[in-house]
Image 1 (cartoon, rainbow, N blue to C red):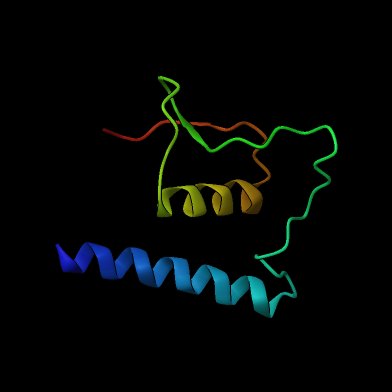
Image 2: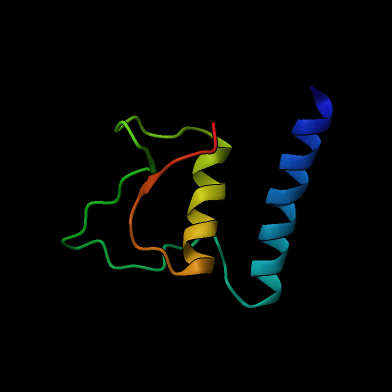
Length: 75
């Protein structure tokens, strides 16, 4: 149980540190929200992800240039 949590925590921490080293301030919104509706990443069935999964999936999407917000997992 704690091994998985440490791995996720370490991964999130490393992502934030990496962004900071590249000059990205992750606490600032990088978009204009005048007409945009920002939603959480969604599972294939439309259920929104919660918690740290939102941070991880948004980070992956930004890193890889993904524009969609629907995700699927191996399981």
